[in-house]
Every structure is written in structure tokens, then in C-alpha cells.
Image 1 (cartoon, rainbow, N blue to C red):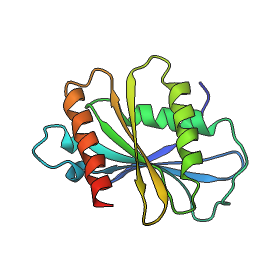
Image 2: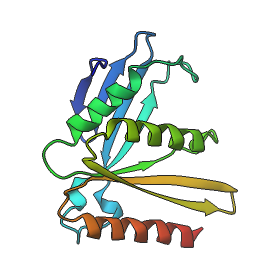
Image 3: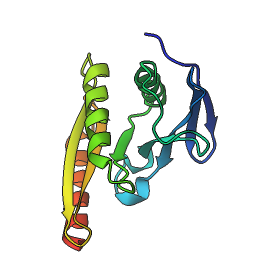
Image 4: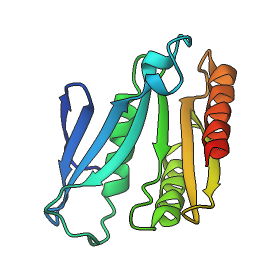
Length: 165
């Protein structure tokens, strides 16, 4: 599989940087978020929020590029090596393009999860005050020892957020 070269800066947040052939700069981050579920879970220290960002100087609507998705898939695989990671993906709603982001990410996930080594659980909730649906995903390896417990905690998290709205 072809993909762009990337650099990893692993400080408090694991940040992967890559540049496309169109000179568009991306940052793929894995921010520790174990606090969301609490310390009582053995797996919470391996919980991360996953985000894909354009650099501030990049155009808001970059041209199509067939190497972006395999690069992000390669980065995702690299990060998830070793300990059993728990990945949360929450679609950015700031520009109201969250449904398009969700659909694109879902398409990428299906395209690159050909060996079905990962499970993706999708949950949404609607915020009546702002008239917006939030799209959220949980991604874990299919052989994660804590799989049932993680999915239950994710469902409780989303239900709790929805009740607060």
C-alpha cells in the first residue's frame, strides 16, 4: 500500500504529521482521554481521542488526494500496535459538515479494515438546543480482552451525554 511519509512527535499527545503532494499539511492526533471513563477501568489508560486536522495554513477545501486515506490508515495501524488501544472518534460539528466527515471516516474504516481486526461501534445523540446530531465512534481490536466492558462503558457515556442535553 502506498502512503505519504509521516513524522511522529510523541509528547503528551501522539501527533503524526504528513504533507501531501499538493503541499497540504495534516496532523493526526491521539490524545489521551482515559479520564472520560474513569480510573476504575483497567483499560482507561489506553483510551485516546482520534482526530484528523488540516494545518492552519492549509486551504479549507483541499483537492482530492488518493494517498490521504491510506496514510491515515497506516498511521492508525502504527499507533494501535502493542497495547490494546481504545480509540474514540467524535466528528467535529463546528462547520456543520459532521455528517460528511462521519460518512467519509466510515468508508475509510470499511476500506482498510479488510482483515476485520478492528470493531467500530457508532453512536449518535441529538442536541435539541442546537439542532445538531453528534456522531461518535468507538474503535477497538476484535480480540480486546475488555471488549464487552468497553462497549458498555461507551454506551453509558453516550447515554449520559444525551441525558444532559
